[in-house]
Length: 200
Image (cartoon, rainbow, N blue to C red; front, side, top):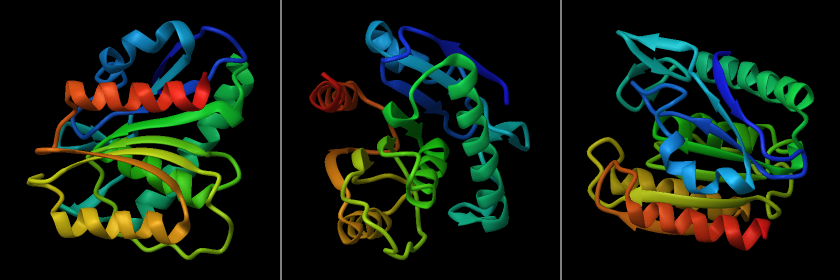
């Protein structure tokens, strides 16, 4: 997969950066510029092209996911992250999935369906209308989540469903509310504080 990698230390946490629809591997890098000295960064380009807009998995309509594509691309992404960990020498137990919108959605899918490998996530403006069975302990997973109260893509009903899912699974969640489908300076402050709390 096309990507950018920034290395600080083999012992440092590693952000796996997953862009939103229409973005690419450079889109979210400015949001992590202030953390470059204390982390590695693996920023990945989505494999799916939807009418010229890059994504991480296909959809049938807004909010209606192609579940075969989601599962298939999740496995591709997992394999690429594992391979990159070996190639670049970063620790899988310190990987933080960092996703916005479509990137947040596949990041959540990875966190919930590959539970032995991914334990940390920063997810902004997700829409994840899927159920997950509680077949194992998720209580060690730590997530920072930001959601928009007036997000035109993700309704408050969708937001509440995801919050209920995380609560039911016992995930350690820190939540910030913003106005719409966005990445704001207050979100940057929020996930920076979360990162400092868990990795310093």
